[in-house]
Amino acid sequence: MAPPYSTVSRQQPRLRTRTLTLTFIPGLPNDLAALILLFIPYSHHSRLKCVCKSWRLLFASKSLISLRYKLLPPRRFSHLLCIFPEDPSITSPCLFDPHNLAWCLLPPMPCNPHGYGLCNFTSIAVGPHLYILGGSLFDTRSFPLDIPCPSSSAFRFDFATLSWESLSPMITPRGSFACAAVPNSDKILVAGGGSRHTVFGAAGSNVSSVEMYDIGKDEWVPLDGLPGFRAGCVGFFVGNGEDREFWVMGGYGNSRTISNVLPVDQYYRDAVVMELKNGGKWKEIGDMWEEGERGRLGKIVVLEDEAWDAPAIFMLEKSTIFRYHRTPNRWLKETSLPKKSSNDKSVGFVALNGELHVMTALNGTNLTQCQSSRQHKRPATLLTQIYHPKKKLWRSFTTKSPFHLPLDFSTAILCTVRL
Image (cartoon, rainbow, N blue to C red; front, side, top):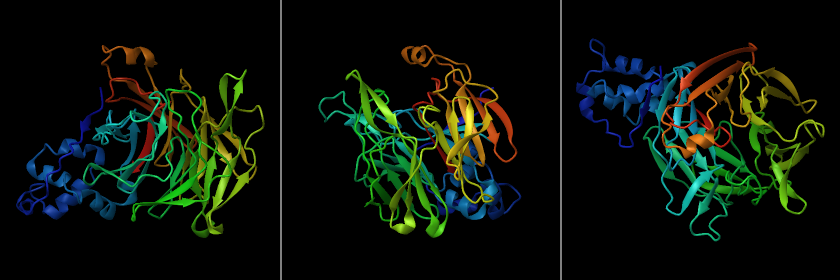
């Protein structure tokens, strides 16, 4: 049976004073009834609006999200996965609640009349807001038309108002870059990137610039650049207070050509670290594996826990999960997937609520055939395998997605949000 999913409307009715005369739950004071309804997982709110008029006004209230952050204990928050199957201005992103197996479609991002085919952007959540930064796209104003361009655009989705807004663009256009939110601060740091598009497997320009976004001021500030050009990398923060560091791992820099024709990327085996206490100076970390051990870094996720001194860094490589150990500067095997995927490239890997989620298309449908056929209307079946690092245990479940085509996790963008 397919899990329920709903579509979020862009138009929000205002919560008027007449709601005081409406009853949320018969026999209970409205304050108590509203508190009870706040405990309902966020992924169910859209469907519950049709129960009655009072519930519609309550779940459409702009103050609902702030009340959940203020009144609910942290363990009662909804840990959701936001999936962008392709250009968010064309295909609506979707929230997925793994705990309740519920889907919730979000409004599409505002459309750019001059740009199309946005990909390799970064999505990051800060509080009740979802940010879409940069990316690579085709611009009808550029020449030649078949050459992708990096984007500097920035958008924010507000879960309280269920609306998108345009923000100040980045100083340097970029896609496929490292990005992380500064802990306990309304700031976002981006580093590196380039112009490569998913349509082309190679070529494209790379940058080394670094900049920080101040959410309150809506402005970007340049910082010291990376030691070299680096795109396709991942970024995260380690440490607290003055000892906080911004790590950038993997990626590719300059490319070489085979027979002066075929470009081949040169992937980094090391990492670079920005020490915030030293004015943002960079230092280089040695190679994380020996030459010939692997060609490139796999998919990286960062898992944080209050009981750990530092966040745990995990990498998915084919059907094996590795864990990064800082002292030897090496990746050591943590576990293997119970069920291997038929397509190692189209695998989603994300850290959510203290666990590692590995998502694959269960039916193994050929993506090329599905995209060329308009007759394929069956919802895609997803297999999610979940690993608990502390308990060293696996569990799994299957679900139907609201998308008519199988998700291509090699190009889809995943982001976690807590509401």
